[in-house]
Length: 139
Image (cartoon, rainbow, N blue to C red; front, side):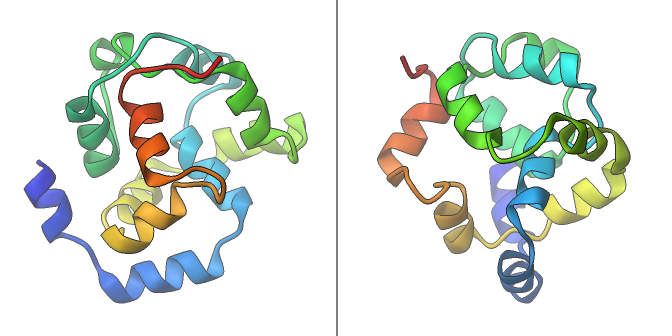
């Protein structure tokens, strides 16, 4: 799956995507576009996931509840930091109003080099990001 993910990047579309979308769209991407607020809180507050599950989620753009039962741990401090500049009403609207087709298209056009930079959120080093999404939680 990872080989497929890397080999399917569209460089031109991804450059355009990174240069023209705001943090509002990024927050929508993190939300996976279709989950209610209550379910999203549950998804981001459970126990840690491996790189295999993370790569599969990012590369395929969809997931089963069975895999998400074994899901990732984000501290509430980091979560509050990620969404602190958005109102709850706008957030709920973003989570509920985008289709999976658009999400799959966006995921399929990532550029790896810029993706590494983009997911750092401007404040995390790549090493810290690997640790953050692979197993541990922030205190």
